[in-house]
Length: 407
Image (tube, rainbow, N blue to C red):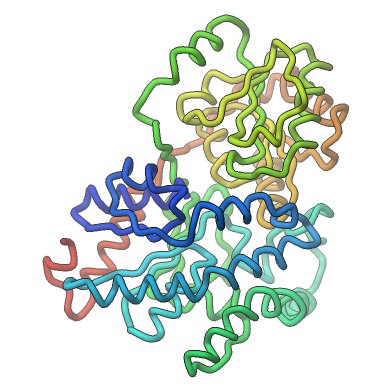
C-alpha cells in the first residue's frame, strides 16, 4: 500500500486530483498522503484476510489470493465505475498487478490505464525466468520451448484457475468473453506498464512487455520526513545498532518466524527490534534486550541498524538496499523467492531457506562478521517522481488531453 500512496502523493504534487479506493484500514494513511479516500470493503474484511494462514503459504497461497479476489472484485469494479461516472474531468486508471477491476473498466469505458508492478517476479520470461519456488532458479540450460511449456502449464493448472476463475465468472455476468493467460497477455494489455524497480536490480530481458518502463524503487514511507519516536530513538542510542526483525507489519500469522528470530538474537547475544502490528505474532515473552514497535519508518530506522531479517517483500528489500545494511531473507511465497535470489545475486545479503533459530543465527553471523557486508553502497533513489511524470505524459498524449487532464 505504501508504494501506491507514495505514487499518489507524487501525482498530487504534479497537480493531479488523486482518489484512492482502498480498505478503511488505510484511511488515515491515505489522508496523510494528501489523497482523497474512498472506502472499499470493511476493516473486518481486511483483518479476516490478513489472519488467513493460507495467504502466504507456498502450496495454498494462490488459492487464498483467489478467494480475496472473489470477495472484492464485483464491489471494487462497481465502486470504480461509480467514481468514473461521477467525475466531470478526464480520468486515468492506475492499479497494481492484481487490480483486475482497473483492467475491466478499461475494457468497458476505454479509459487510459496504467498497471504498476512492484516486483520483477510478476513478469514471465523464457530468457531470464523469475525464481518462483524455494528450489531456487531454474537451470540455465533449459531450452526456451520447455520454459514456454512451463508457463502454459502454470496458466492452465494454477493462474487461470485460481485467479482467472473469479475474473471470468464476473466477465460472464457482464456479457464479456472469458480470457486466458490472465497473468500474461491480459494483464499487460494496458497503455503503460510501470516497474517500480531500477534496471540494475533486474536487467529487463528482451521478452518482457514492450510497454513496460522502469522507474526505480518507490522509496517513501508515511513518516519519512519525521524523526523516530523519542522512546525508540533513546533505545537506539543506548547500545549497539540492533538487528531488525519483520515479517511484514500487516501479516498476523507469523509467530514461528518471530520466535525463531528472537531466539537467534539470544544465540548471538545481540539487541533486536521486532516490527509487527499484531501481538499474535509475538513470543509469549520478549527478553529485555528485544523491543517491539508496531511501525517505524524504514528510511529513518534502517540506517541505524546492524542487519535486517525479513520475509522478502520488495519494499523491505529496497529500503535495506537504500540504507546499505545486509539482509537475511526468509521467503515464504509469491515473489519473495525471486527477491531473495536478487539479494544474493547483488551480494547484499543471504537467502535463508530454513527459518530455524540456528539457521537464522548462522546467517546473521555471516552477515555481521564478513567485512564485505559492512560497506554496501547501492545507487538507490526514489522512482516515484519519474513514475508520476510518465503517467502525466501518457495522459497528455490522449486525444482529449488538455490542461483539464491535470486537474
